[in-house]
Length: 311
Image (cartoon, rainbow, N blue to C red; front, side):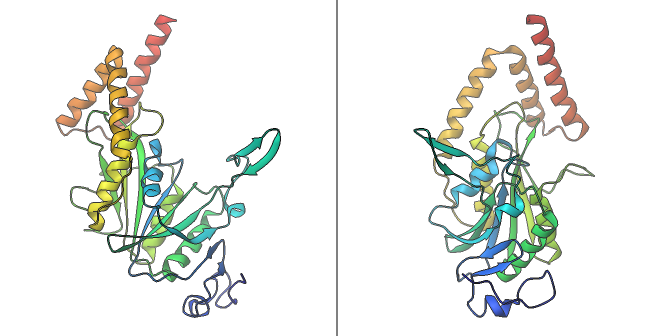
């Protein structure tokens, strides 16, 4: 496929009338390519990247549930974005023969659910060229006439697995978040940025409503946390006013809950810690800021002391 004819100022990519309006969708713009013509009505873009702010794989699991019967409409250049030594492509070796490499992919898929046009943007978090990525995404959402941007994420927190998954929001303006979700935490919080948040900021600068839903998962849980993915999908469904597919997430969440209950019951310090977190939730006093960090440090210190005593 040939690229679009170059026009416009350097670095801005081809003129929209040379590509979308003229039907030339096989269009190379900076580090991304629109792959085929689509007919969209006020699409919502839903975004999640793995690793950072994807604790328990909750956000990427949620967007994966939206990708059935979808088609790829945009791809990003993996060579430009990923460090293959930090994120080595999996290699399959069959009977001593090097058979297949699986390269990381950052793609946008189009799905229609409940009459709503969705653009599902997901994959590994890019390592390189964030400034260029931001400009490419700004160009892309403008060309696709995206009406709304929704980031999905998950963070470890001092919350118990025995209560509903808390979700906090970010929003570029008032009234964007669905009922029951508030922007937070209150006050100033400085944290290492995610590419996801950088893009949310860049899209908001275009005047497109941009928001995010971030599940909080128990910091003492390792591995996938399907309850958080399920909660993100339920909140997203309420936000969009549609029923979203959740697959087997409810069963997986129930099975993990049972395993965590058994593990807590078998260890007195863990059980005591979970009960302390439960009391905070029941009193509507979730730890925040320094208190959250202190709770985690206290738990880890207690476990470390017990390990040294028993060794």
